[in-house]
Length: 320
Image (cartoon, rainbow, N blue to C red):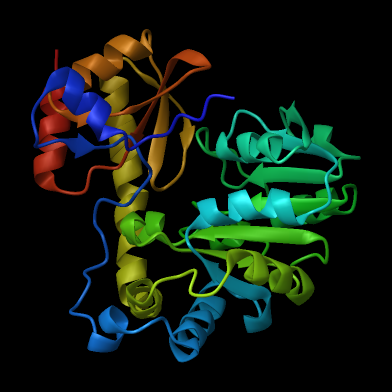
């Protein structure tokens, strides 16, 4: 399975040149949380249990789950790689189209994987994987619908990497016994380079995952930065407000360019264009990188610009 991703600026630079790129090919917040100077302990010492415990306490409050249900890992991607190797092999149903790493990781671990166009087609699977809200089209499901799905499958994995602005969608507060929730830190807080994510699950499964991840799987700077960032509730409120308004503005800009909104989330939007390769090249010549998908010649995804300069360059690129 092809495992293409956004953020591949080296491809854009090799083809179009230049260094001052605006990377809108990901759903990473372009107004990142401002990182203060770190303690000497974070840089010079191995990660401590105290630092991890503090992060777990803050993150559990943010997600609304119990502390014993939460495990920090080196990115949601680490969880996506670990889970298929911990769980007993079987038949997996994966929402499609969706984030392609789930099906690819399951297949590489030996699972029988089938694509499901919706959650209604997942009943009876040993493992069902849903991204909520979905990437790239923004489809969403209420916790009640996901709880009903959990009752029809062996285990349910819900990837909530883009759910921070939408706590009403999260399954973390009322986690079914056979469900696992994955969360990403880097997207909403705009610090993807920290490589931090969380697994929310029952303690027995978390113990297996902790053993598989090994000691010091999350670095000290990530533990310290994330604990401070996730406790900064005024910043989070301002960020949700900005992206709520900016996503609507981006839809308006795209429609004026002749593109039709397909869906999206607070952190990215998806558009139906007459010709996605041509649309991507048009933006690339203004050094704005966007996201195409191998299964569609029409879909183009854009992250949300973060500054006035970025908005101005995008408007100029899309003006006839």
